[in-house]
Length: 160
Image (tube, rainbow, N blue to C red):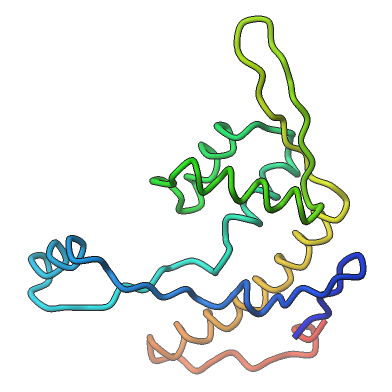
């Protein structure tokens, strides 16, 4: 496991890349049963807390406000996200010191919060990227085996 110390706080990166499993509700199961003719448990196909690095990545590109962040998150699997989820996550990220916000007033509309990534947020995003690289290698090996190809042997370069 990589060192996950950030400004004196310890973050367990492993928990952020474990896959989140959820049980489909009755309506989803009914639709799924009709389509497949059998019952399956749904597996969420993204890492746990995936919204946090998605927001940080967007903010690394440029400062933004909530609605715009929600639109950008759609490209990462959050097409039907509840706005409350985004704003709760942003508030938690601000408490943790990985984003900051200021009120921006415009001449033609209401004031809105403009979010900015902090240095701690950049460091946290770097941890995510390193963890996801390791996770991607694991998934590559999974699909190699799944398709009947041998897993790629680890090289000394992979251990960096």
